[in-house]
Image (cartoon, rainbow over all chains, first blue to last red; front, side):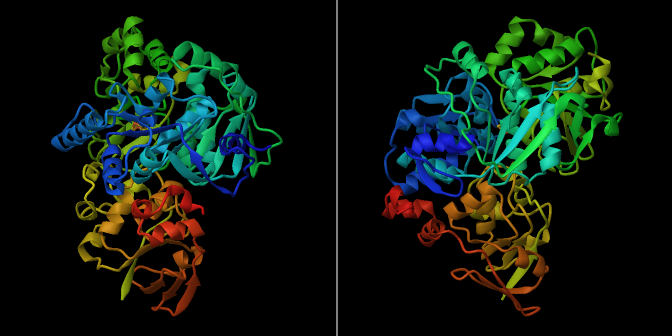
Length: 415
Length: 165
Ligand code: SF4
């Protein structure tokens, strides 16, 4: 009896748990990447006890990969040596960790996954509990297989209606971030549901739990349904049967009701994710880079939206337009179906799969005074390079329309 | 004396230490660049035992432990804030950086004030203006981990089950 998170935790705890309680739970998978694994190894060595279950550990090289400098290369070396030493079975180096976790079937309804990355909330799209933790706790979980959680209160976001053409899940989520604010979900589970979510395909659903991180949430959840099960069966090697855990007589701390029918394209403006404006308010603002990538919006369908807009056209010659598919698998499908050719002909540079320019290490670093419009989830000052640069967040369609003009542009004019 | 260094609302992990410096995990190396963009004078002038004071949602953003490690590496005594971001809170507990949640102190302490903090009782005294504040008490299991000097040390001596025992 309870909210989705109370239901998920209760199953694992083997008895009813409620918001406010502290529980120590077995976790299914423990995720970390090239940025966070070295510290986890350090914690692990200090603890001095063996790994409990190697099968639970999933490692990715994606944040600065392939290495753009010697220090990153040393990090990768450390991780690869550790994988060899401990004979770890799950190592991936073909895309953004969260996308690969989904594609490889690690994320199933009701599972509990901790990750040394704040966007581990993404796994909530499958009705799983995913949350981000620091590296030390990852090292601890390698040894114990467990993690402590305070069962969070829940904010329910009830979404109704259908978006208009040119308006996407990204616009809806940016709008929600603006309403709730950067700390509006702190320590909370944010449950997304309603008619709008029910009708949404998986690639659009993922955006909500992914960006629940931006409002400080412990997790963002969408209950598993037919869409979830179909995705798992058709797109991943995950083996069923899959549980359908749903809220049962839930008591929510707060319910936010939003009708998406009248929403226009939204932009989260420099310097905060909750500095949200309708695109109209910033239309025409010059941008120097358009970055289409990341765990938020670089799935096949996103690249398809971009390619449809750019097909037969040329991007503004003074704008850098970078496309980084979220995973190698997405890259391959885009290549096979001709999307990559369209993007290249339009003047984009397409990079290897990974986090790419998202964290300002490589592949699209911003100079002082430059402004980027990106499909990312986060626009912290200096995230993509110079602290004197600016980041604006929007949908892939808005990014494509903006790429054509070099100015923030409403995609509804070029669909 | 402990000098207070004050920071605003929603201090994110990139402001605590920009991502490009997170290529090392050495606390002293990280400490060289802590707050380098928002308050460059901190690195130059902070003394061991000084106190960081922040507003709401301190440490939001990335899950990187580099942020609390950099603060701990700078030898700050503790962080006082109106509230902490979730992952920062956990990370600070786990690495043994003392944190106190106290909205009144967060607004009642100004840059440069002389501050006395009793970590075990949560009492905060601003000696510059004579005001006293009481921080929200930390949950028992958090104190247990903090007392051991962090979760790693805790596990050297205990089983994980004992966290909640
Ligand atoms: S794509 Fe960006 S937000 Fe996503 S995991 Fe990588 S660095 Fe983090």
